[in-house]
Image (cartoon, rainbow, N blue to C red; front, side):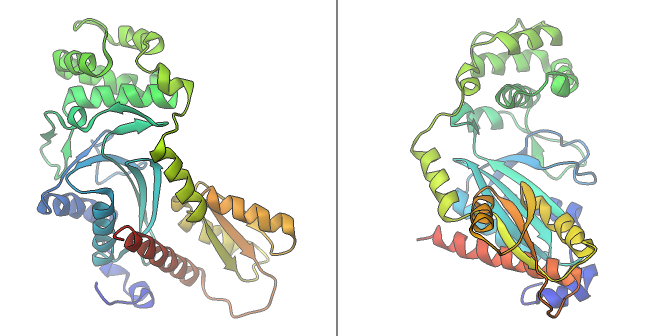
Length: 326
């Protein structure tokens, strides 16, 4: 819907695409660009059921190219791209959201390799090796072995309880035990024998030295330092003034619809140095900062507040993406 204003979009909800349609068209659009993408895990019920953020990997575009493409793609489908948080060098958490009610959001976490706390755990070559199509899906997924090593690396890097990934790892072993063993050996070194059951992999995960560096903590390189400086000078939080709201109903509605882009939310007032410092810190830490003013003023509807906030976030991101061309 090029050229339509947010207010017009709000009046014509039918022309805002659904999350399922948005996702299916997005994977096709990436392929039309000549770029490769794979959904790394939890892909069985997509796009009809979306329970969390979608982790995917790409090959072909630079980060700047992909972000600008996703921004324009969102606009063409009645959405806004409102957030792009670089949480690791070459790993960006993006939020796209409908420009009109019901303001549904998609959280798309893209990576070019699997990197955590400054440590590269899996290369793009391993993630994309023998990737495949699944009947009924328009996107590609990793081979059983590549998904297996990704889930192992993610569990180790994030300190996840093994029980949270055990069922899926066991399914992948039954699907292709030899492939899982082979690629795990290349990725991590010494691993359990090819005929090992899932319990052996649980013991291995707790004892292997492959993940000791990432478990010890963050590695700081030039990429990591640049990332933190960008966060300080270009905060990813958002400050929003909401009119008088004695029952907090508008605040609850606004927060519910904007929170997919932020880690947390807080309410402050304009008064005092303490609140000023608190606000600045919160913005750097990707918080949504709400100022509920008591000053009488024209009070727009909650939908109008959310639509305007999304438009402002998209405009801010557009300006930041433009700077990546320089």
